[in-house]
Image 1 (cartoon, rainbow, N blue to C red):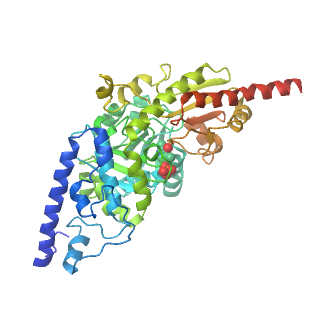
Image 2: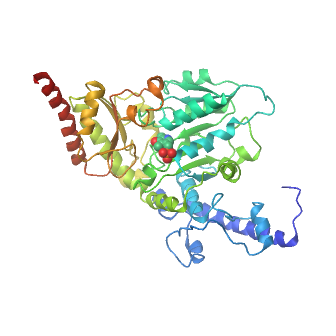
Image 3: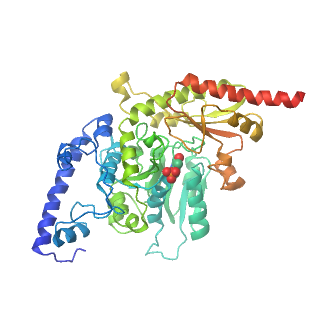
Length: 475
Ligand SMILES: *Cc1c(COP(=O)(O)O)cnc(C)c1O
């Protein structure tokens, strides 16, 4: 690319592109001074952008597959990636651009360095795009085996991607960390052939916790990146880049699109990350590199409609996450008192291992403005085990009258699932033992209904377990 000589016509477009990029950067800098809610509401779509969109005050949905160019010079400059343009919706699209800028600003909130984002068609696409580039052949040691180090308590899809697609199909060694709170376990698994460290915090469904700062330091000591899946926390509660993480992945399907109107994901990375492989552009701006090259070639782009649904839900993310978190804490405390419940996992419960670390990282963003001091807030997700094993768990589950039975979470509506027969079914018994997913585990994503109504439904469903046991005893 660098040795191409461009005609004066193309060069004029490149010059114009530089001005466009400078203006965009200036707007970005201006927005970074604003509060979280302001960023969430406006993103990078301001009056200037509106004037080139017929004055629309809401980001328009661009459903067009492609961009028309003024002439061949404009086309050449754009396709050489030398001026801001979108070209073709598999690569980029203005509506996706608004979403990406907002996501980068939100996860980069309170972080000093530069942050970029790449929106994807799903959370799994984001995890694939964030990890696969690090599995390239190392030109210096082409024959060496490759390994990755990841927390075993993770989303079922991630478990399958790493354990099947990477390990079984491609021969990459996956070193699962069972106790994510134990730094020595992480440290003992990283070596000269490790390409990245991956952790989910808090994890789905077990709500496992790890110390982001300490793990980032450990990874950086080996010259490799820390990738954090912070889907469950969302940037309203936790922004791992501030604590040393290099790349954040999200399933934006979940609490970031609370309405449940679409599947989506995001790769969000700070600039200048460590990496043992890849061209220089890759660590310099990982999210942009992914977007322009591997993402372009693999094709997991999100539909403009879904992008707009997410963008729209993000505007009120903080207030929704705040309500859902406070409801979840009440429900978790209620479940702890219920005689049919064995154990409750929720990062906000004092007796949960990892509570101290969760309290260090999970804060409702800007809560000091509302309450005078920062307030811990632990998210919408909890899980609990039911006394009486798998059968009792199914009895309770089938008795739910308002709480939805679905493999979903992060909804404005409360949703429950039994992970062993749904999200974590395909990884098998051994895989579930590794990830600590027993058959009597129920995952509950607490929504924004009145908490009394949520608890009432759970209470009657749990009471049904007792009744069915009595029936058996007397029948
Ligand atoms: C759901 C989920 C994913 C996968 O996201 P999809 O949008 O369903 O592809 C990844 N990580 C976590 C923690 C999730 O909850």
